[in-house]
Length: 168
Image (cartoon, rainbow, N blue to C red; front, side, top):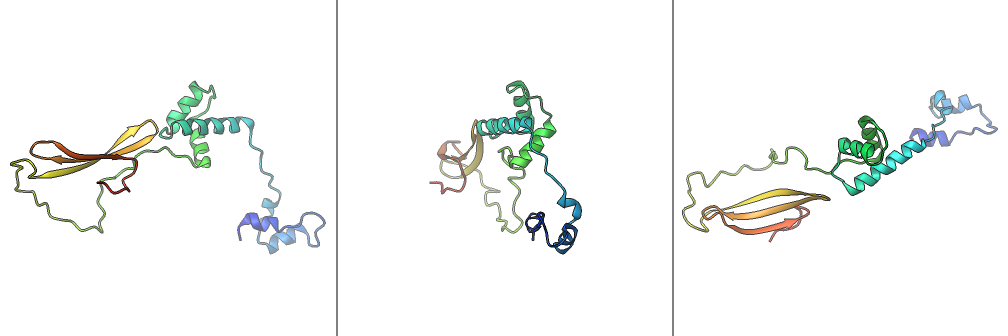
C-alpha cells in the first residue's frame, strides 16, 4: 500500500492508540507524520501558467527557448534549470524528431540490394522512394515521394501528419 494511503489510515484526533504505535503498525516513518507540505508560491504558479501558454503556442520549444521567452516577453526572470524542473513537473517535452530514426531493427530480415549492377537506362526502369519530414510552426508533416531515377521525375507524392496512414 502506498505511503499516502497508509497516512490516510492514521487517526490523529483522540486516537485509541498513540500516533507512534499507529505509525509502527502501518510501517510508516514517524518523521513523515509531521511533514506539512509547503504551499506553492504565486510566482511559481505565474511561471507555470506562462510556460503552459508558451508551450501551447510553440510545442516545439525546449527549455532554452521557453526561458528566453519568459525573460524577454513575459518579463519573468527565471533560470533555465527552473524551467526544466517545472516542465518535468508539468509533463511537458518539446516535440521534435527523435534520434536514430534510421537505425535498423536487428530482428528485421536484411534483404539483398538488387540494383547493385543496374543502371537506370530509360524512364520507369528504376523507381525510388523517399520519406522526409517538414518542420512547421505547430509540429511536423511527413512527405513521401516516389521518384523515377532516370528522368528524376516525381511520379507520386503524399503529405501527412503521421506515417501511420496508408499511402496511395
